[in-house]
Length: 247
Ligand SMILES: Cc1cc2nc3c(=O)[nH]c(=O)nc-3n(C[C@H](O)[C@H](O)[C@H](O)COP(=O)(O)OP(=O)(O)OC[C@H]3O[C@@H](n4cnc5c(N)ncnc54)[C@H](O)[C@@H]3O)c2cc1C
Image (tube, rainbow, N blue to C red; front, side):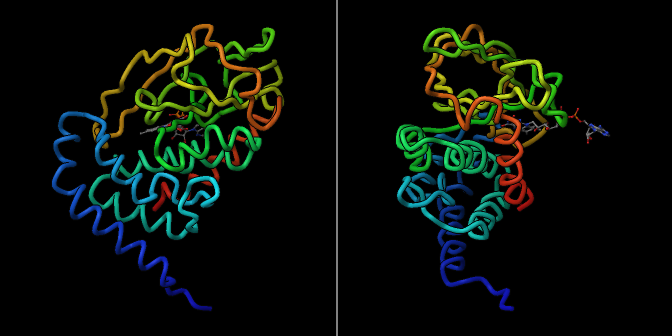
């Protein structure tokens, strides 16, 4: 079996290495010290197709494989784990659940701009009482007419204060596993509030925030993957994210 990298994977490593040397290395320390989101660098990464590197080209991504994605993360995280995490939250935690579970309409409306990097994404799973134990989620979603109404806290949200589009899991009934449901939420929705930006010991250019959903209203059609499928959406999404976090 040939374990060598393919020509395409080698080219991606070279391209990302150049981007990191020329664009990231000279600037990133300023963002780290100021605990500031490196938006200009993220926009440049988007132009290279890195915000949706594993998303098929027909949905605005670069259509590369998982090894290429890991190569990208390795090259970026050598210099900035924070920027690596920003890229990972968009690729694995925002684009991928929509690719895997979204309808054709949801993919056109939300996945394409996320994969192109025209919009930025975040992932809302964890809560004060639901970390490793995802089934402990308490934030609720209830259907009122043609809208879902979201209430509760989400914590440790990477990109949460700068994201345009969030993918989140909420409780739609009392059964711990079977009544969790995923949604696509625009951060401009009424009742979407950023309540705290964490002070961390490192990876400071990646902002980690707490959100509060205060009767936040989103369209009925923004449910992702079907009612009661949220636990499965969460587990599939996390499985996809682990390999590049390791990289
Ligand atoms: C920098 C950063 C970025 C993050 N970004 C996001 C994000 O974008 N979106 C999001 O939703 N979340 C995010 N998270 C949250 C992350 O997914 C959680 O921190 C993680 O799931 C663990 O949950 P917790 O912090 O509540 O720890 P806990 O679940 O409380 O675990 C604490 C410790 O207890 C151990 N433990 C837990 N349960 C058991 C058990 N039953 N038996 C034995 N040991 C146990 C764990 O292994 C761990 O060592 C982020 C976290 C960090 C640090």
